[in-house]
Image (cartoon, rainbow, N blue to C red; front, side, top):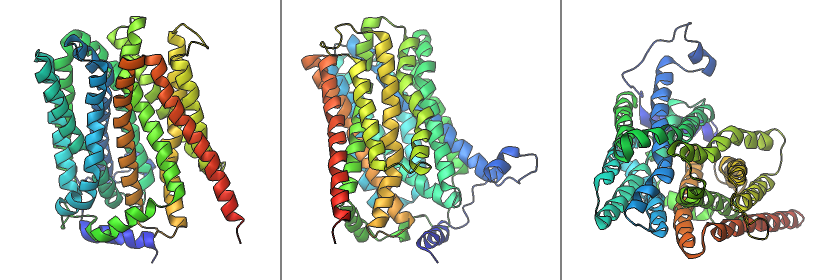
Length: 455
């Protein structure tokens, strides 16, 4: 039995029958089920989780265009706004290892998913109530508290969902996770666009409460369809805790992994940079809430459309993944140059330049995000790690930690630099960081080539 087969067996043994109470019969008329190779129950499971991820994507993205104006009314600086936005991912970063090493093994992925879903929905509703808080200090205090609690709860969602999906869809893991991510992209694209008119008509408060209410309804549905294993833990026996810690350190000693981490961190920081200060930069164009939301959706929309192409370039054309990640960083550099041209290029800020820059940024970020998993996984296997779910879970943990840290660093950096030097000069930080990725790619390729020629 191969490592992958044994991992699946271990998953099944620990998860029991995976009953959900919605075991619907498969009918010939259910064309979608037949096309995807899923039972009706599995399709219901995927749809329910996907519906939650749509509203989760909307909740995560709408803070960028709509929170800064609320903070500005209370005379909160752009620096502090950046720290508020980054607090969510900072909490996710700090909590990820705690979930992976302790909470998920102790309480099981199903319970963590349900807790995370209810936590996110309640935080969304309470965040909307901040619109009624006039006192600046109280407003900021609860902004930080709710962002930290929300990020801490959300940190357990993806690792737990990964474990549950591995058990529920053992033969279609890549397909179902890809669809799951697509749902998040839909929410991230249309959330800011749909919430723009809502902000104008019913206000910041009720818009967030509406999103939180939808998340709460989806959390109840997840409670209904989530598998109820005979044993609480679906991943406990995959790897002892001391082995997890050792494997984590061992994986981070590989130079190729460090390059992938740098590439992903730089990409996440660029996303956080946009989230933290783009709305303030757009003030000069005098756009409506709907238009601001649409501009925020450009990067996510382009990423959702183009990210599968990076996978095709890697898998079908066989292009070196290091070169792919470096190419994405180059597009991010060009995108940020167009986003706010430096004085020696142009002294005017044009909306078309901003939109073009966001499009290139959306194409570029797909390279690091889509290629990280296969590149890091292949590297780990080449270095002797077993081909099991435990190894892929380890890579997933590094992805979560790196992306969260970068996404927390980006808004904090952009907010601080915006107040100090302005948006235009602040973009040099991301340009420099992405350029470092390109330089590191060249050095890594030289290192790999020389290493391959050694006797």
